[in-house]
Image 1 (cartoon, rainbow, N blue to C red):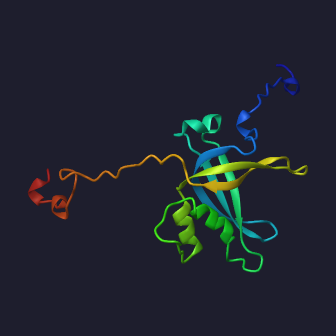
Image 2 (cartoon, rainbow, N blue to C red; image 1 turned 120 degrees about the vertical axis):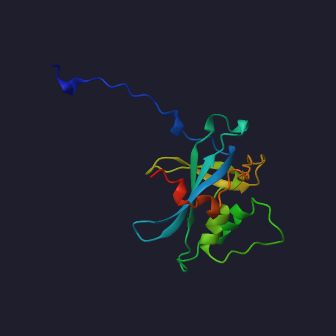
Image 3 (cartoon, rainbow, N blue to C red; image 1 turned 90 degrees about the vertical axis):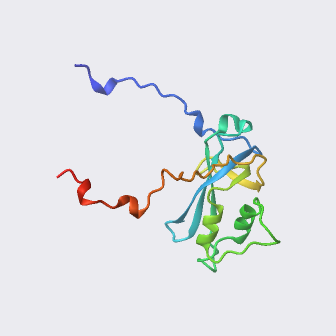
Length: 172
């Protein structure tokens, strides 16, 4: 047996993590929004944007994930940055001049799954390395694929009457 300390390894560059160029606009969906807390106790909502794979103009960036933190306010830790929330909700069409939410959970329910266009920026950091950020949000240029709700046909529907068992139907 050979000496395992001298094995050779081939390392391939993973291009999935290269920075997206500054000012690139991509069609995305909000995939999920998760409450998180930093080690120092500051709370935020981690928003995950998935670059849409059904839009050709997204090119090589299809299915990439981008992130945005919506921070809680320092003086009101149960309230999250209303400007960030407004910027996201304003990418959608809604009736009237405003939209009101009762709770932050209602905001998350409304925003999760929406389609929007994201302008990507680059945040430079010597300490942590450069990373992509979501700098602006716009209405989507491409309608999301519609998923039609399929209802059961009459023959597929079951009633309680269909589920009853008569003793003469049993084989024993």
